[in-house]
Amino acid sequence: MSETTTETARDEAAGASASSGTSGATIELENLTKRYPGSGEPAVDSVNMEIKAGEIVIFVGPSGCGKSTTLKMINRLIEPTSGRIRINGEDVTDIDPVKLRRKVGYAIQSSGLFPHMTVAQNIALVPKMIGWGKSRIKSRVEEMLDLVGLDPAEFHGRYPRQLSGGQQQRVGVARALAADPPVLLMDEPFGAVDPITRDHLQDELIRLQHELHKTIVFVTHDFDEAIKLGDRIAVLRERSHIAQFDTPEAILTNPADDFVSGFVGAGAALKRLNLTRVRDVEIADVPTVTIDDPLQDIFNKLRAGGTNELLLLDKRGRPYKWLRRGDLMRAKGSLARAGTLVHDTVTRDATLRDALEAVLTDNAGRVAVTGRRGEYTGVVDMETLMNSVHEMLEADRLEAVEHQHELEEQRAQLTHQAQEGDGGEGKA
Image (cartoon, rainbow, N blue to C red; front, side, top):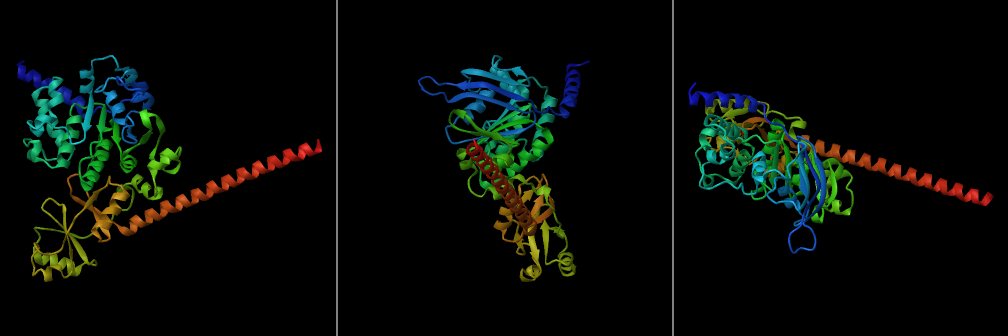
């Protein structure tokens, strides 16, 4: 058998095992501590934490509290002064840190792509370093670009400077996942992009996690981002002391103390909109036409339909413009001048808060829902969103009433016990 044939066979076998994907690993931090020379206090002081396989854990806390330092000690970009790190039960504190980093994906703010390398070369970097064959690397690069929603044919040969900020971050995530690591560390990866792009990148991460089931540790200073992304959130004080480590629901409804309440802030009920996804509510449909449809057919559909508007899709089936009766007449039959551009869309993985902001921004009473390549899949309207808000507020009201009743019962019991005690003393 020739060398090329042997490599192909080996890559096909490895690819077959990789196609199922490596799921997440457990992470245990035991008394993890970092002291810098000349500093009186440790930067990170005896952190103990267990992270389950396949969950997203968010580190959130004030600037300088040690959250990024704690994250970087997991893959030993920063060496711990003392303590232990176990991944899937294996103590990684004493193994070669370079080998460890090749097994742990890492994504940072501003993507960290090498500017002199193409997109494909950036993604292929770690697989090449750990000895994958050429055919397997080529296949993996295309797979990863498709996974993060970038057309391999279009982006394969581009350089980072030719990409938007959001596209660079997608490539950064693709590179971090290329060698199929069980653990992905993300250090404020979406902090340098605009709010709309940030929302879409967050949705993309949620979608990826549904498919990949990695263990993700994510640092952010944005509590709303933590609520949206996290299965559990670790609210950290100075020196990475854990103020509360719990689900977003528990932290929103029952913050451990005033420090955590400060992070939750006002409007906890509305923040809970970040806990419900578009896929969890009713997605309606509207009549659509495409940019290639004859003008007369579009006229006829507007006249005949029971609705006052149509959604015009581009050649790829993506929302392009809203067309209303009279738009084509006023624009003298030209689609170029007719209708209102679609400014924002949401995916099924977007939160109801994202959808509500998009509806209010567009001031049109609804927002288009799209698939992974931006194709139209439906709409969510203001009525659906407001019903969800009212349901959450009513649930919060009932919970508050129930809590008040419990407090009153406890006071009554204490009063009764005190009175019985006084009566007993009097009789004595």
